[in-house]
Image (cartoon, rainbow, N blue to C red; front, side, top):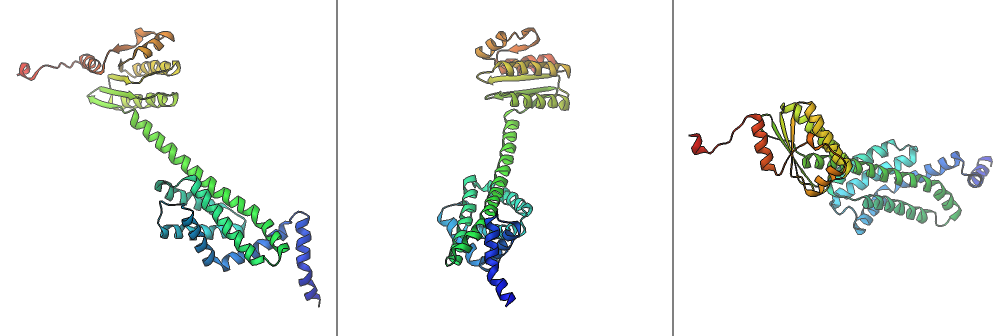
Length: 304
């Protein structure tokens, strides 16, 4: 009788504990029961989730087989996080998943959407299981929702962080491609600049140029800014500093292609134009650079 009385009174004890603030012990018991339900119905629930993902037109860049494979892995990680209360494995899997699907063009809203769909699928299964006992259902949901919210946040944050990392890498690659340091001939470099120059790009430009001067032992550098429509005072000053830094490394800098607007900016900020060697266009700059290096271009007929 004592054991039977204990079984009858235990739900009341859980209810009282949760009413006083959902004690850790009571929550743990409910989560264990929840995890057991999710493991028992694993096949049915993950298939339902994969179907809902397809119906919602999420992860459209992936095939149905790929969606089901990822849904299976995420489901298992989800249940493990509920069971253990730790999120390190889930965080690691979220990063791994993001690395695989971001190159496929998967967007942030799709990842958030599939996690919310899983939460909805699991909640509906709980309603179906405990529909005859709303008191028990309330207790289960009280224990489940905080953990589900944290799981959703973990997956979403992991995806966003990986996406931001990829974007930074792409931006860095674009900047490097947009400021190529080209060796025309021995000891002569050309740096063609096209587009908007912001302070970050200006710093990268300087670093690449100085590295190129040192690597190629350059004596003359032609910086062509024909493709730069405008330049603010900060970037103009940085250009002057780049010229000075190149001079310290033993290279003469010739700036070509200054627009009237940029020339006016240089005058307005008080740049000492005597320290800057400027030529009207790129061809004239290359010709002057070759003269400085001792090269002489003559027609083939005259040379023979």
